[in-house]
Image 1 (cartoon, rainbow, N blue to C red):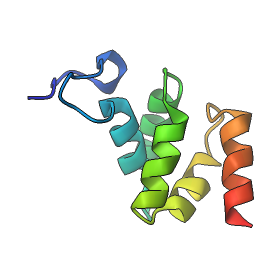
Image 2 (image 1 turned 45 degrees about the vertical axis):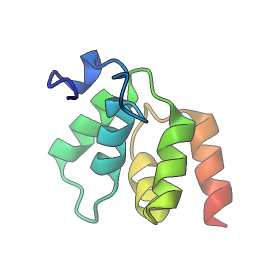
Image 3 (image 1 turned 30 degrees about the vertical axis):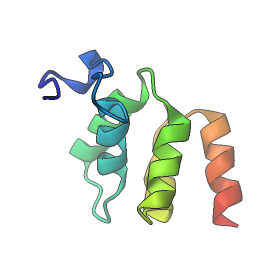
Image 4 (image 1 turned 120 degrees about the vertical axis):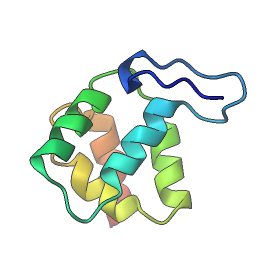
Length: 91
């Protein structure tokens, strides 16, 4: 069973293939309607330790990379290297 604490305090569960923070980040970004609440959630998630490669691979796998690109572009905590990878993937 995965821990039920906040994303900021989650560690990798031994049985989980990816970390909960990456899943939460992907779910936050994979939406067409993006409210101020979503922006705050994204900012909180993106400000912590994130396996960005995992997030981008999952977004590609699930066909939501354009949504993730659009929504990550809104957040100041998104690293420049991630922005550049997303920009290259979009063109």
